[in-house]
Length: 195
Image 1 (cartoon, rainbow, N blue to C red):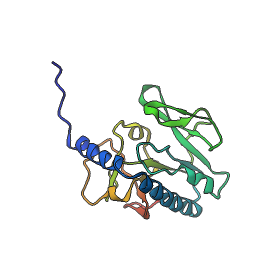
Image 2: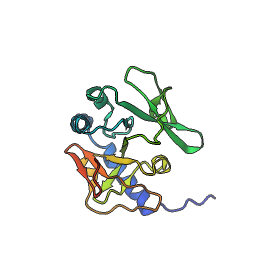
Image 3: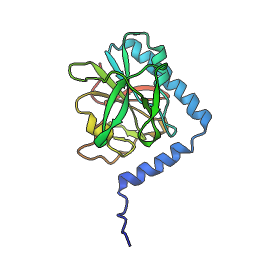
């Protein structure tokens, strides 16, 4: 008989919050996503990042990619993650009229396109979070793709306001905190300010 190790506190919290997110009514997800997109579009009007790295929502995550259609800096490129071999990830340029495919875990990703080179680029990454605490600690999906990918890039966690928690989340040395959080209510800087 195979013995299954008990789940740690972080995994148990993630499971509970994922279940709560999954139970959110579709209308609430759609309304909240539109509010988040409006805040994002307004924030981008005031910030001159050369590139935006975003994500394709899945499993009741806030949907943010339609904000690229409202991005007034029309020459600013938007990039989306694509999982490659060995558990690694890269960001690929994508526009809404370009081909998309189902990738790892059935998540939509660009079929092809220019790879984002972060070296020397002024980039902000919006990453999906199951939850974020007031110190910027976040719970992601648990696969570690973003933690392996991110080192010194400006990070904004995107989550539902109900999952922006007062109580601290468990974190480990390899977990990369976010500098700000985006919810239906808008942006909130956490500690170090984004430009």
